[in-house]
Amino acid sequence: MVLRDFIRTCTPRDAEKVRMAYNRLEQLAAEADSFDVARFMEADLAMHEIWFASTGKSFLWRKLSAPESSYTRFCTLDVIEGKNTQDVLQEHREMLRMIDEHTTDGIEELMSRHLYGGVRRLRGLVYTKYADYFVPLEDTP
Image (cartoon, rainbow, N blue to C red; front, side, top):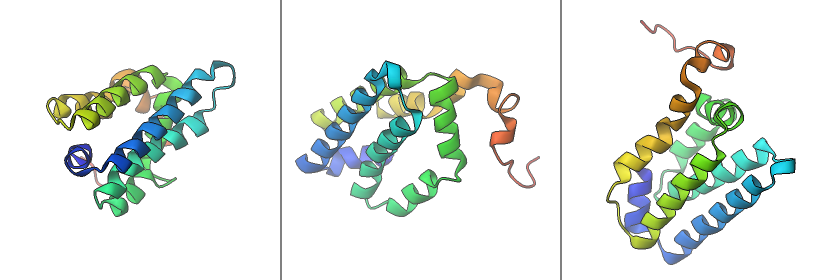
């Protein structure tokens, strides 16, 4: 819902920052011969950070994007194994459209698709092939 809050309160300058960050993502994704996962992830996370900072949720963003966070590891794995760059770009284009139109119509469906896309692409690999990448929750039944 951070994006929803951003859309409702963003300034033209904030929207332009997001557009510039998106353009950087497109540029990095287009570098097929020299695609660098780390640079792509850095640019993607920088775009998300704009939304969190603009809505006063920087603390939450720092927790989500910390180097040791499972979220960051999962997103990186999704880029590598799930080959998600085109999905990410398409979903971010839709987010930009919503920002430009100042509309939140359909945002829940879009964000579900965006946030759960990695689960769909990677399926059970996080529990099998990549189980050692993630720290299990303590006392999980």
